[in-house]
Amino acid sequence: NAGVTQTPKFQVLKTGQSMTLQCAQDMNHNSMYWYRQDPGMGLRLIYYSASEGTTDKGEVPNGYNVSRLNKREFSLRLESAAPSQTSVYFCASSKANYGYTFGSGTRLTVV
Amino acid sequence: TQLLEQSPQFLSIQEGENLTVYCNSSSVFSSLQWYRQEPGEGPVLLVTVVTGGEVKKLKRLTFQFGDARKDSSLHITAAQPGDTGLYLCAGQPPRAGNMLTFGGGTRLMVKP
Image 1 (cartoon, each protein chain N blue to C red):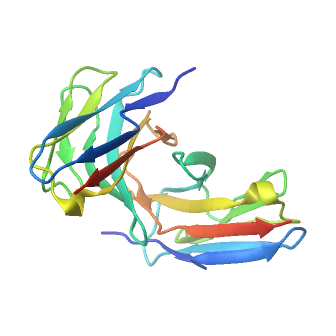
Image 2: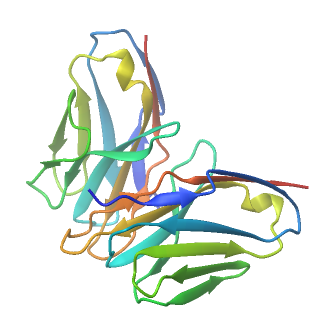
Image 3: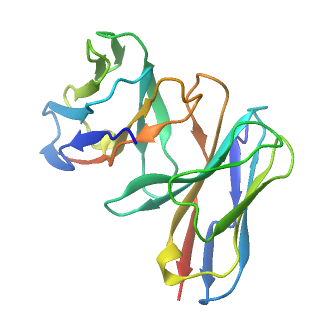
């Protein structure tokens, strides 16, 4: 019963470097989400995928891209990291009209 | 954008005390969920309330959805140190599929 698995758990990047955050769920959920969590800002939606083959922008998409590789996997890419992208990133999945299952997060620092 | 405001933002109490956390909006939601997040982990779903006026109990936690489905409260009776964490409410706007709007959270510390 793994649920939602995120990798890596921690990452330090230099400004301008790129990286991909990986997320996989084993619950056969249709919808998947990427959030960032910053002190005093709560959870903000970056991108979401309502179903396999579709992706849409959330509240704060600038500087990010996503790929819904298949039903299980939803990755988040930072093409050119900036210090403003220092945050904790959470992936979540859900099925219709049910609550979200979150991963344990990726703590990213951009220096 | 439908906003959810939680109050208080921070709460520090002694073990055994009661507390209430509020989640308010000017917008109507189809449902409202409460999550608890512990340090270093993702939020975990506690409950979903769907019907206006609905009350759900989870051991010492009581959740209520407002009659107009614009607000919700979480009441904890006889708080314990294990209740320490960040409590998040999240509303499902009408006709928004399974999208959620999250409140800013209430950080609770229960001292032994």
